[in-house]
Length: 137
Image (cartoon, rainbow, N blue to C red; front, side, top):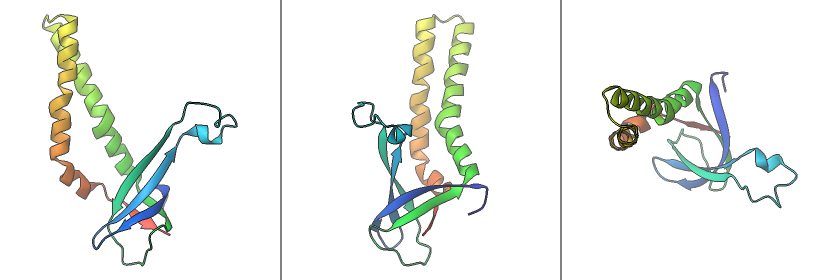
């Protein structure tokens, strides 16, 4: 893997003709803490990534590494966090500047996220084609 990639370990959960589903167990820094057994701050998530087969033979339960370009991570951060945050802030500032009360401006600033996330959902197939991950043993 080149320097311009990011990677994550995962386990193959499902194999279909045109897709391999990989489970990635995401753990926070708590997993290395000596007090993790008595602490109630459990921060663990399971994510699933679908990858196109690359011609190699894989089996269920096999441990693999999922990787992608770092540029994809920055695009995901932009579309998932930065763009909506900028939209909320811009809407809030514009509404306050035109004389709307702060509470109404805040409500409108949050409501601007509804069409944004609906648009992202409608474009999910487009993003699936753009965000391509690969696997490596």
